Length: 188
Image (tube, rainbow, N blue to C red):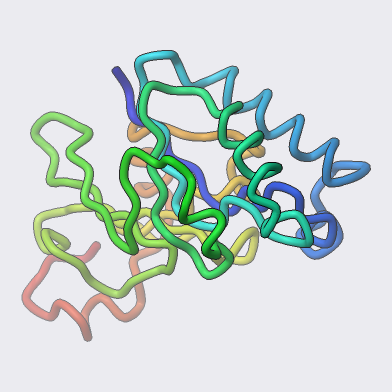
C-alpha cells in the first residue's frame, strides 16, 4: 500500500486550461488525461489523497457526472481535503475520508504530513520537520522547504509520493516567514 497526493484537478473545468496554460484541447481531453495519469501511478491497494479542488465549472453540480468521474478514480481508498471549489455535490461523493485538514503517517521515522488545500505558515510537528502539502496556487508557487505544492500544474499532471515530495522540498528555499512563526526552530 502506498499513499499518492495530488491537488487542483478541476475535473470538468474548461476555463482552467487557459488560466493555467494546461496543454489540453478541452475539459474532456483534460479529464481523460488526468484519469489516465492517476491510473498509471496509483495501484489497487493504494490511498489517493486529493488535496482540494476535485472538480469545478458547469458540470461540478451535476451529481451523476461527478459520481461517474469519482467511480473512475484508482486506489483502494480515496480521500478529499476540501478546497475552495469543492461544493456540496463533490462533498457528498463516497470519499473514505473528507475534511479541511488531514494528517497522514506516510514515511517511517518521519513526522506525519499535514494536508490542507491552502499553504500554511506553521502546523503540528512543523518544528520536528513535518511537511505540509497544499494546492490552491496552481503553477504560481512550488512552495518552500517545509511546505510543498502537490498540485497537478507543478507535477506534470500526475500524483506524487512522499519520496519525490521530500526531494523537491530539499531543493526549495527556506520559508521567509519561518523565523517569525517558529523563532525557536532550525531553518526549514
